[in-house]
Image 1 (cartoon, rainbow, N blue to C red):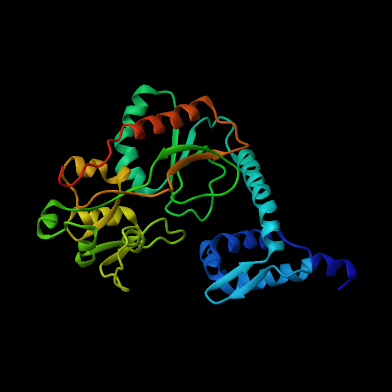
Image 2 (cartoon, rainbow, N blue to C red):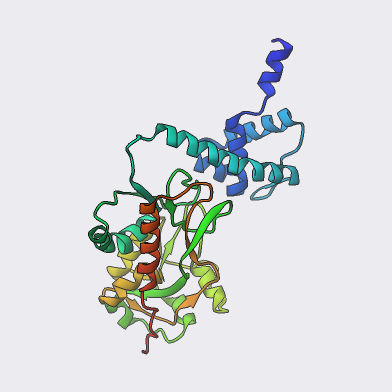
Length: 309
């Protein structure tokens, strides 16, 4: 192999640099590999080769994961917006020239329980706006090629941000199950059959944090059924299988029509949901219409009432 070939062999690849960004985002080689649908050894090997190519240490191996070095964090901060711009440029080149649709990415549960029941009203008032709805139940990869995104978690980077709604949490159960539960305070729910959401990527909120928010020392192993699909959690609650931790903007309609019952006072966190769009992407008039409609429609959702009210 020639000296030139050696240099090429050690040159940082786009793949390795993107994997470094994935490791930073997910906190471990294993989680990054799962998000990229590849083996953990391949990620570890790619990062090791990247360290050799750059001549610097990029990660510190620790129990339960890895931590990026200051040099690696600085590199990722520069790489991420560059990769986002590349992805948008490629998508724009590949998109049909006559595609004037407005694209929106939301979770499956938000689409099923909130958006779709209201979308007819939007189409009625905006019949010429073509929509492309994309559902995604993890924030592992920012959809930078889409117009609008309502992420499940908190996203960093350069985004235009608009407040969608506060994060309001209310434990809910079917009316029949609610009558069998003696719930007069949040601590009483530690004895109830709980329904758990296991998120694949970033966990926004769970029962343990809900109990901590109320100053309750919950049992180490909270029992109950588990799934990684929030729509399944809600359906199980409707069917009387347990108590779900309800995000109010999703369960409001179900409480209003009597399919679910709120069991305690609501809890509000300091992490509101947002509608975001790439900062360097100029939205069309149709996309702005959709964004403003989403904000105004969600703004008409009444706050939860006290269970005693």
